[in-house]
Length: 450
Ligand SMILES: [Zn+2]
Image 1 (tube, rainbow, N blue to C red):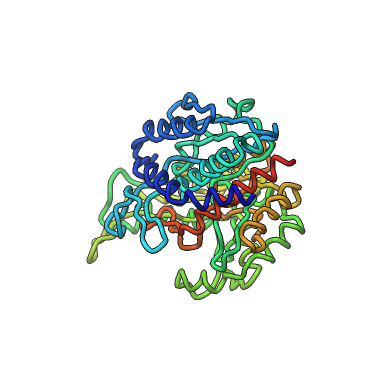
Image 2 (tube, helix red, strand yellow; image 1 turned 120 degrees about the horizontal axis):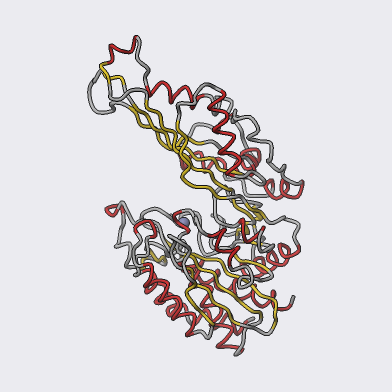
């Protein structure tokens, strides 16, 4: 692999320029900005590398998906899942340099998308170029599936994968993110949580009333707070009947992987200025809960008057936003139905439950043979034993790749703990960018060998 690695070392600046060019396209999916241009840029770039690239017809209401294929020495096919859309750049004043002019400072590149996920896309293109330029061929076949709706919850991916099942056929899938820990160990992540996002809305009166009517008129804020209090108790358990019914208990191997993860609990408490974890949990138990347990989170709550000074008012309406992070084999539709039934049964049939989005959870077993191979590749490239993470605590559209395509899906990438994705001053360190590209190149080599 030395020739391939040397090529990558020698072409870091070229890859950085390419990444700067891609980051200059402000492809914020939430605003529908620069979407066609960015998809077009990727198709051009993939074609210039000799891949058969095209923009696939976009799903109804969605952004186009870039698909590409190149045959290699081996028919074994590695599918790269990525997304070309980014999060909104706001708040602008908190950026040290313009978000869409990726800027180099002290060994880091700052800009929206440099880490999530454009930097990973460019690292993958760069690894492909390294193989082509040094060996004149690719060691395995590769496919790209690069969507433009990831940052708004990938509402079309499940349908898209089902519709293009033959085109996306592969032997394994490298997911879109990842990075190294503070002490430089590469992280190998094998799953995602699912998500159910809802709004709970209640209206008790045609208009707000003078608060003296608190004697006899119903208050929307109280209705909502009482309803919410039936969903989760101070013991942190979700009280919706059947909520935990389909939770698949972690396997002993998954539990062992979580126990072997670095103990960063104290750092996390300090970073968030929290006194303690819920339930007073400590050590590996915190990691176990964080990775394997579902959640019920109030994201926002609005009712009545919240301005300065007193205003004696009885609110006519109240609204809460809530998300539930789900674990295998929970299903957002099933949880939504259970939530509705629960509120009804508790006497809160007046609370309107509005469904905003749903994503199913997905996970590749720690014991899958490919996990051992990827571990070896990462250990060799980084010179450190990888941290195996059975699932992210976050969500992504992995489910159809695992369930519909039947692929083992795994994730490693170019980030690090202070990479600030979704936030001002998103950045990558150049050494992580280079290492990440080497890891992709090495993976392609090992994968082609079978
Ligand atoms: Zn993101």
